[in-house]
Length: 288
Image 1 (cartoon, helix red, strand yellow):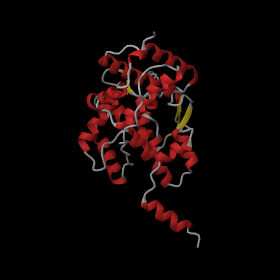
Image 2 (tube, rainbow, N blue to C red):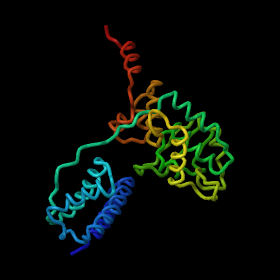
Image 3 (cartoon, helix red, strand yellow):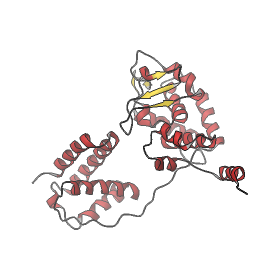
Image 4 (cartoon, rainbow, N blue to C red):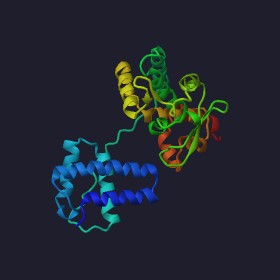
């Protein structure tokens, strides 16, 4: 008998060979979590799972980890993928999915976007790591990059003459180029330092910026502003970038390329068409 953790490692080896980097990283996170779950359940082997194990896992997710139903469903599905992949014979009985409780987040309204920009302008860029934190917000609004892509930007990959940034670390594993504009350009030039490999730099401890540090700043920003539309987070900035392009008349296929989506259906999820756009387009294209 092989331990569950051994099968997890073997599936990660498979992902490393045949799946995208983002998928590999996702399964790593899921398997770390399930190893913790099974430690609590005192289960080491698949053969120890029984018809009640599924319910025990769900209870742990809901009442101990307090995960949302949608996240629990995703994690459980990933776990059963391993069972199916290796054709593992065990007694666990899969139940129905939990009710979806996904909260769709909205783009940031223009009036609140101005509040955010005014707050950023009020900060001293030479104090602690404010310069990199502010630049992170501006770049996500200006380019639509994901936070994982942002912290991997290398100074050597920035071309100021063409206003583009070459991303060699992306969610899909495919290298791509993003454009930047006047919103982030000045601070981007100020933060650019060829002596540092990475653009996003923590000036407080003189090392590259981490996601933890950036999320700390998001907490600080949200506490300071308490916006009516809800908290600011990286995905909202990315959605705001995409929707503002759409409102300016940018073709969806171009937005898809800028966001780095392989499937245009994913791009459609990011786009928010409001009543103003519906009325404007209806009046412009009304056929009679």
